[in-house]
Length: 122
Ligand code: FES
Image 1 (spheres, helix red, strand yellow):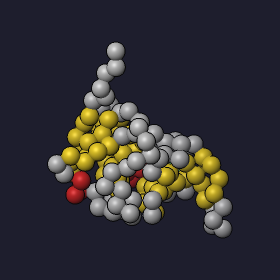
Image 2 (cartoon, rainbow, N blue to C red):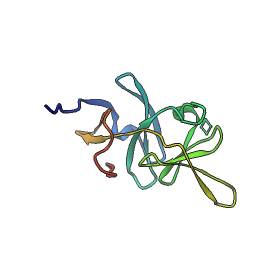
Image 3 (cartoon, protein in one colour):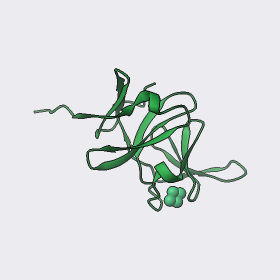
């Protein structure tokens, strides 16, 4: 038997402007809701997999990535982790959990399940 994942309302979509990061809770998981410069929304684990800095406090959005300013790891909308040096060289780092999200009636909803595709919502 397959059970539908449960969805949780997190924040109003208007509260997350491009480049914005808002703290939220998805059940017992601390998450951040952030919006890329292109306008795409992402619901992501709040804790950086490097040394657990909270991305709501240490994160900044850079284009389509969120950067943990503690040591410079950066994460794409699909959770892929990278470190980029001053010359632009990118090295793979640990990934971070990303959760499926949707905007319904102006509210960002998410489920603890991973996104079915790499699709993200505006
Ligand atoms: S804790 Fe985030 S990069 Fe080190």
